[in-house]
Image (cartoon, rainbow, N blue to C red; front, side):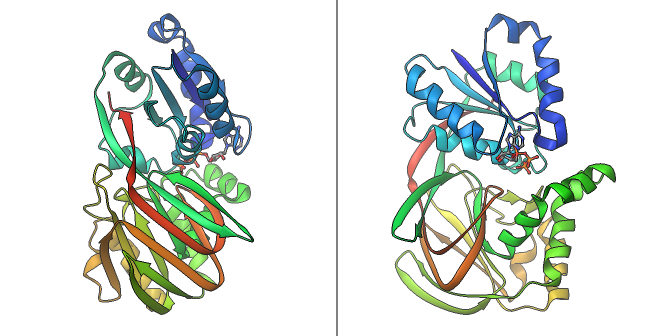
Length: 309
Ligand SMILES: Nc1ncnc2c1ncn2[C@@H]1O[C@H](COP(=O)(O)OP(=O)(O)OP(=O)(O)O)[C@@H](O)[C@H]1O
């Protein structure tokens, strides 16, 4: 059985457009895919969880049609069923997961490839656990988790009014760069303590810390050049104190993966990172925004098969 979970709103309506095309596709009709359209934030996760609980032994693959945020939700909905393969058709704003695994096909063609081929990639999913008041909550992620400026940019980019503006002026590929420029205006560096593979590091001032499983984020920014989701370690990037103008310039070079040559940038490979701060830290994880004062991030344990077509 194929399960297809579609976010119709992803990519400002691209999800819905693709669904309309798929409904006319012979292979889609023949395979009798069970299709679910998401209706709200968190719906994809609920659907994936419920469907897997009932049909886990007959599901061939869960195909996600959406952006990285929808993929993140489905991954978490399936977290008790690591044997279920995921297929992903990107129709989002950023599409960084697909870029990271080198998937260039799109739309109906990609759907046909995923259904007819059995080529899979085993990937490591990241895991983060934050302390919220008295309890801990563990979640999985595909691409990256970023603290500080990263969180502010994602939060701005997710605002419905900003998304409407982006759609109106047809500047969707520039969603994250524009959000970055606006967020930077009022941004203040963060203070934190880190523990990287057990080694303590106290950071008085940092613009951002990004822990990446995959090279890209923000719609094609090569934030962790060389990161590989099939390897059991993260690329941790720490940007120290830096002027706002220089940081803007640094972000131009991120598209070419050249930002690591700046003296303010430190890049470390690690399996486990612990972050704590006396102040709430805003973060983004695969485009979802949150805040916490302590977080542990790990990789190397959870593996999952991804259909690559
Ligand atoms: N029907 C819906 N209406 C509004 N929001 C939705 C709906 N379905 C899902 N969502 C929420 O929209 C969020 C963003 O969607 P998604 O990430 O798929 O697209 P995107 O933001 O365009 O792409 P990207 O993450 O690649 O930048 C999802 O994480 C989910 O919480």
